[in-house]
Image (cartoon, rainbow, N blue to C red):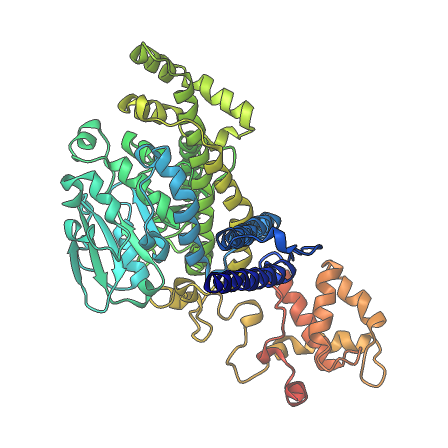
Length: 618
């Protein structure tokens, strides 16, 4: 009995101690349990009575529930926080990227923004192949087009002042292939089939024209300083007649279109003795439409006719071009004789020099404007791709489930109505639409079931590119550091364009350049007349004021702006007066202007009065 009583007392003691310890544990958990994730503290305002003791398993279950609440609170807060700053993340993803130069920027925006649109709507099957990095990295190119024996190959030789591999010159049709004349340290010839597989050159898409073309295509590598700044494309002479067009074996106008999209200048050469435009030449010129800003027209061999015949030939050429080009604007025609032989009629020598200088100055500026040209071409391509997407999606929308073949023919026939509808709905200029005849021919070859419906998001990306990315690249153009933009075309015939030393440079010894390199001051030749006028004006202390000189200078009838410029150049010492030497200089500059020459912005050293050279230098 005593043993059983002791055991009961021990059991009560154990239960009481266990209950007390569990009570303390619950109080500590209830009063101090905190969720560190959301900052909330769960407290128990009351005390737990001894008779409400919770079993150990229930206590553990409650702790797990509280931990689960804490674990679920953090993701909810993160979700709310991410939604709150979603606008910031979106702005961060759409931030404007910075590029080292314009060419790198063009590569990036084309691949990331324009190329998906082109691929989705089969742009490359209708209009132009995909652009590669080599297309953006290429040097400026010049394309020479003309009928046979108009001097295309001779023009290249005249620029380089040397022969190049594969060159053939003669009165008969000699050049029978496309020749890309490019720079290389080691000279040689690369055949067409090997050329189109070179990833470093931009000619890979030409493989689509087949072996018949590739056998008539080559690259001539020449070590010429002229070719460091640009490349030149020589083309076969265009003959008359339908048979020779068919017998070429490849799409001649298609090749011209491919080159026209990628070159910086297209030079159309005409012979002064052969102004007739054959049917194929007409088709070739029509293939160049859309690239009017690149075309330069040259009337070659103009020295073979006298001045009266030249006037008639020029008028006949303009009349012929008016029927082919079909533009309301008058085209600029450069007249000259681009070879190194003596002039037969030199009566127009001054005209030829001026025209040659203008043409070569234009060609010499190509590297500097190369990035801008590529930017302009990409904009034109993007606008065409957008219109193409609208056309394809519109055709897809109106195609029925049955009778597709009949509907296809009807849509192709009435493509003009689709053009009009798209033009009105999207406010697109008619000049942005592709040629309707070519588009009808391409649509007839394609399966309309492969066309896709309109995806506004893809078009929005292209619109964003045109509005933001293009404007950013435009701002980079004046300070562009692209490799090919840093090279100026030098050497060859372009050395004479910048010739300021020899007496045979452009306008050397004329106008303000007269007297350069001579020991005597050029103004002294008419000094006696100038001094007489100076004395009649009544100088004071050997000087004339502006009010005194004004009436004499205005006798030249030159505008006040020109006379003001002459006054500033003549007042070498900047004292507001003209002494005898300065007055003679002013009269000399007036005569220079009256003879049709330009007044320089800065007075050349050889025109500074000898007595004032030291002071002027200081």
